[in-house]
Image (cartoon, rainbow, N blue to C red; front, side, top):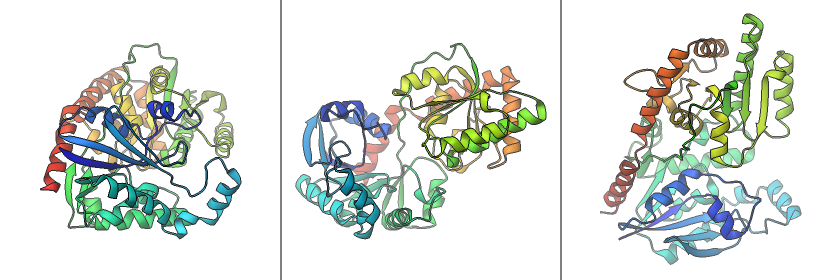
Length: 399
């Protein structure tokens, strides 16, 4: 049996209950789903090494056969807001190149003595820096969750530090897990010696009925940000209102920062569509989110950079037809048998407005896309294929 370390971060309801906390949002659900997929597997023994975002203390326990090592990732208590603020202002982690975290991870890995290390995501340095100490001594594979170098903000000190760490890992890694076709060429520009493995991340799908009553035209759910295209979407609705006298309704589901929400409301007001848009805020559970999303006729996510966006994949499974910008990270979602996503040119708001108008006024196309999209998602995300691919990767790099 292979002893495998998963170096990652995560939060889910089971862990929140274990730590007896309620003030931490759930994130990285794909890691939690992977744990469920592998927890009874006889070929590997999984050891999760992760920053303790719950209590910021060193903690070890075994839960459902999985070994968890949560480490203190800040040298000061999370509840001490004064020192946390000073710590953040001084950029202690960045200036020390995450030395505190590196030492924590090294100590844990030295104790575990794994056969292999699998790092899930290199864009998060408060665990990914564990790569540098061990990749030459222990067989290591990195999986790409997303590319930080693609995001819009790159100028402040923290982002520059994170980008440098991401790039150094991508340049040095011998084994890289990819989940979209474009990623090979993208990574080879930095590292032409890397060996690639197809390591897909799973998604959690609700069984919400697609036949639920529709009371909204469009839905946008997930991270509400400029990079996800929310401003383009609002502007597209403004075009439809002005040029075609159409009052298209939109439901926006997700957390919006207090500083950002007023600008979005002001934008919609200037376009004369303020009453057409509802910001619901954060929805506690995925099932409830999907129930709300299914009440809309079409999902629109004009994201500028994404790899298999959860919003889009989940909508495809829920049989909500999708409109998105044509970007490399979404092209594998195209169905070979027919329309599965209505793509438009990236950053072309006028084209986005036309696509919205076209799809809302074509129920036959909506139905066709919904069925094709559902079949495509079922084809791409087969649990048994994922498990086999992970095990094959681990066996290959430990030989």
